[in-house]
Length: 116
Image (tube, rainbow, N blue to C red; front, top):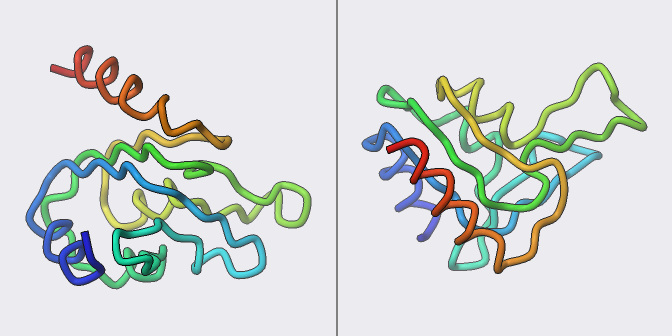
């Protein structure tokens, strides 16, 4: 998925599942991002700028999607998961730590088995 495809997909889909690498930027939290296919970064700022009228559920199978920098900003944490909520997603599933690539498919299978 490229950056422009991501914007279009988010606007149309009530559910989104990110299975990529997440990057927490503790210096500039709005630059925290998901890594896309073309090595571009899809940032929290990109999410905030997107118009997401159908946002319902975001499943984030990426490292550090719910993590914040508790050492430097314990009361002002902005994570990728929080960015999804700010953009209108009512439900967000994220991770607090790094996860191995082989865990993602297992997580998705078990999560959706219970959801559906």
